[in-house]
Length: 422
Image (cartoon, rainbow, N blue to C red; front, side):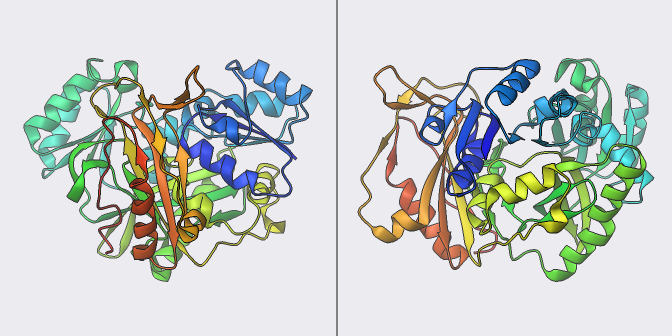
């Protein structure tokens, strides 16, 4: 099997690593990939969807996997399917679950899927009036894609009104904020749950927990994610059962009824409030860095999970996960998330401990290959050190032992990933 992976981050690198260990996979291509993904497969510089489809045809690509949300929302799956090519991900119509927060919230309401009280509006006065009915904190969201930054948790009514005004004027997020969602804040603990879907059937992956804040103890600004671990013991069988019956099944049924069957990754942002799962948001791709913690836990061939979902045949797949835990620690550049940092050479110490070599690895993200052949930190989130173990504590220990072997100027990371359960 030849596989094409679209994307350049740690998420795509991790999917590539899982496929590299898969005996069913012969050749892996990345478009565009990063400075380290050329050690797993071949990087190609093609952006145009039709030209990518041409490449898939001429290089006998059996499966294309789309990593990021933007090409999904822009319709790459539709282009490939029109050409009879097998691709993993939702159509542009189905990708509205992430592409439009208004579409997503209204879909949840139409299908009685539990979510926070909300309004969607392009009227500043209507937003102000609704804000006054809520108790702070108050959540204000831009409708469109904002690279994970379009959600403001306002600590006062005044701050919520300011956020609403800046979004609706276009000052904050341009056209993505010209319509907004204002909703009640949910007080509980947050989870990331991923269901791999084929339109009707689905497989739920072990639930993960992401760490969004830059600093220890969940302090500082929000980021794209500073680390994650899986599975989380904060999810028990009762919560999984509620998610099945109240969320995933009605979502797949509703999407099919509305003429846009959902295929790909349904990323469910869940807030558990007094034992009840309430939906914060849907995304239509893997979270990053959750993906880096989940892929190494996959025991069955990765190609089977992705391919069977893409062709609508998950019912014939046997998907198994290791009885283990994974912790991923993001190492970021000096000025992340405020501004870009100058490139810095990455130096990794030789690892002589066999146990660490077997139970820890690096998923590369914001890296580039210099003309000298060396690897450089060139992005905000540079890499993820992933540790495995028979307990979360052991997985955390292995992840941080690996962190200690990685050096680049200005490196920063949290030292408490998975602290909530430890």
